[in-house]
Length: 159
View 1 (cartoon, rainbow, N blue to C red):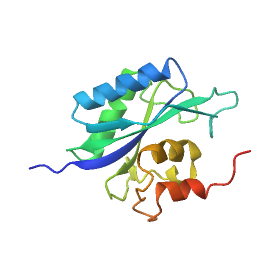
View 2: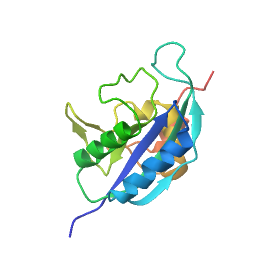
View 3: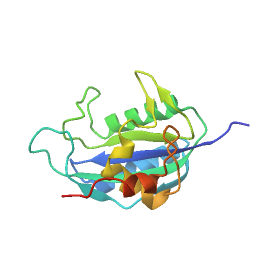
View 4: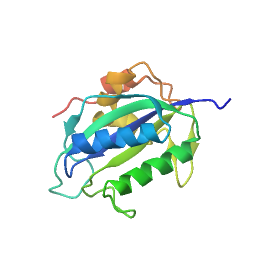
């Protein structure tokens, strides 16, 4: 029997109807084999580390289980981004219809050119931690051992 691994993905976008695009992506992830899917509410946040004038982003967290490995899930996410209109070679500093970032994959810690787990900046970004805290506040980042809710509490106050 193949083991299912719990995962957390962040959905982001600032072009088009983000709610529809997110729900389409969740439906496609389910059709591709993701189970037990739960999505946070959609949050709005200012663009971080983007070119000046970039519109605000919509962000949501998605949790579920996957029977494959982390790279298979990442590649599925990349395919869905492209199907939603994101070019294959796209700067993270530009607007986009859909961004699917694999934040956590079980307790896996990985640092390869293709995939870093947990996501390297997740513990420092409010737009990641707030939606995750809605779904899995007690979950710990495997590299630091810190709970999602703890990381969120320890962020500096917003301006």
